[in-house]
Image 1 (cartoon, one colour):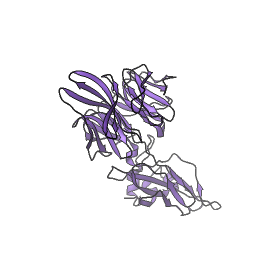
Image 2 (cartoon, helix red, strand yellow):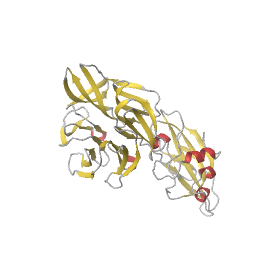
Image 3 (cartoon, one colour):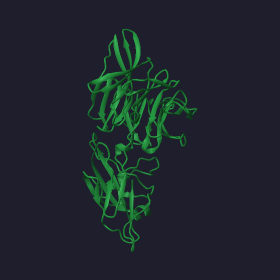
Image 4 (cartoon, rainbow, N blue to C red):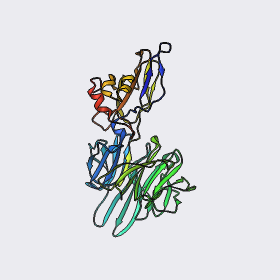
Length: 387
């Protein structure tokens, strides 16, 4: 977030109201990731800076915040669950599954809630007999926790309640060890997302996205008449539900109450899985210090400062309005902010993080679709940015 500080002859330090001018976080925290035929891709929220980060045949992805990685249920170049750094480097195989004419285990969907082991679904064939399976990464390695039908689909973990949900011939719920499975909704789903905070379960089918309580009660149609919603992802921090549509080849989001559906951008292939980095920086300014809350898997922070009056007068020109790099590669969670603005003047601050698993610094851009232009070019050419 942007913090603004005003100077005053009588009250020299005032924390101004939050202004919708800027937000601050790493470039990777502003990225949407998705998998489509041919690979894993990422882009800004408006679809700009879209690029392929990994060549892989996969059906779903999940972000591992603790390790700064992205995991994928894949069939090539290796059949199993694969992982990469958030910039696509450092490819590794987390789980290798068999794939032969007589025995194959094909991963389908993967989910990883912070603090929980990784869960994934798989379609299994042994000697021509086919079935489905929900698996997880146990203490000694992969383990099956729940049998399913051959058309098993998405899986979503509700860690606070010690449960997971799986899209099978019906929507089912079970304890994290697979015990006590029950049917929550007697309907098949193409995508699942669980909102542990508001106690809602979202699912998609052929042309609609629906929502129910975690016990299956009070089901409603969130959106109907959609071309082909295939995959869901929750952005709890932004109060949004993302979905990828196979027919229109688009990625969109909607408020959790069903209002404000917005197409974010088009893809060049069928989006099979979608994920968003949930991290965001929360800034606080006190009388003599600028502080922020820690972020998962963050190596260091940079902070820039500028003149709010110039920023407003130039229509948001950060090249002219940036005045100094207040901190670079800061390992802590605060920097001094004791320079008093002149009366009737104001300053702004931006902070960005450098994440584990990313080799380049982050971005000064906001995680919003309403930003007029990239701030990075302006700050980097101001002569006062952090490098």
